[in-house]
Amino acid sequence: GAVVSQHPSWVICKSGTSVKIECRSLDFQATTMFWYRQFPKQSLMLMATSNEGSKATYEQGVEKDKFLINHASLTLSTLTVTSAHPEDSSFYICSATSSSVSTDTQYFGPGTRLTVL
Amino acid sequence: GENVEQHPSTLSVQEGDSAVIKCTYSDSASNYFPWYKQELGKRPQLIIDIRSNVGEKKDQRIAVTLNKTAKHFSLHITETQPEDSAVYFCAASRGYGNKLVFGAGTILRVKS
Image 1 (cartoon, rainbow over the protein chains, first blue to last red):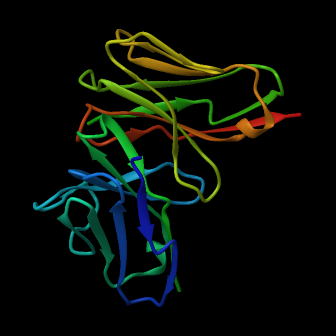
Image 2 (cartoon, each protein chain N blue to C red; image 1 turned 180 degrees about the vertical axis):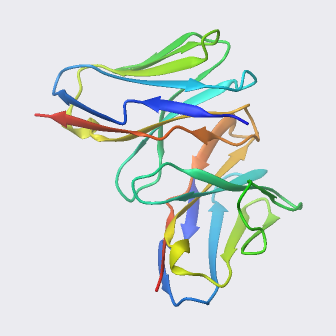
C-alpha cells in the first residue's frame, strides 16, 4: 500500500515552453502533497506544500508564478513549470502523506527528470 | 526554520564493517526523524524512522539513535554489504502534514 506515481518519468522540452508533472496517490487519499527538487549530487529541497482544495505554500525563494501547483483532488497534485529555462533542469519528486496510512511518513513518487534545452 | 546538518559527506567502509552517519537538527519542535536511502535516479526509500518519544530503534542490520537534548540522531548499519552502497539522507519534521528538511546526504561506499 501507499504507492505514489508520477508522470512523466522524464521530459525534454525547449526553453520557454511549459511542462506539467502529475503526482498521484494510487491507493490512499493524500491530504498533503509536497514537491521537491533535486539537482545532481545535491539533497532534496522542498519547493512547496500543497493541501487538497487550498493554495500551495511555497518555500522562500521559489517563484509561485513560475511553479504552479494544483492539488485539485485527494489523489492528484500537479506541478507546472512555466516558461522553462535550462536552469530549471532538475529531478522533481513529489511525496504524499495521509492520516489513513501513517501519521508522519511521507511516501515518495519515482521522480520526473526534466531537461530544458 | 529547521536546519539539518549531516556528516560525513562520504564514507567508505570494508564489507562487513559498520557504518555510522550523524545528523544534527536545530528546531526543538521537530519530532519525526526518518532516514532515506537513494540510488542514482531513483526515489528516496525510507529505511528507518524514529519519533521523539523513543531513544533508539532497530530493524535487523539498521538502527537509529536519537538524543533530543543534544538535538542529534544517528544511523548505524552493521555488517555492511555492497548493496548498501548508496546515498543516505537524514531528515527532520514536526510530524504529520509538515515538511521534511533534509540533510545534505552521505555517499556510502561498501568495498568488497
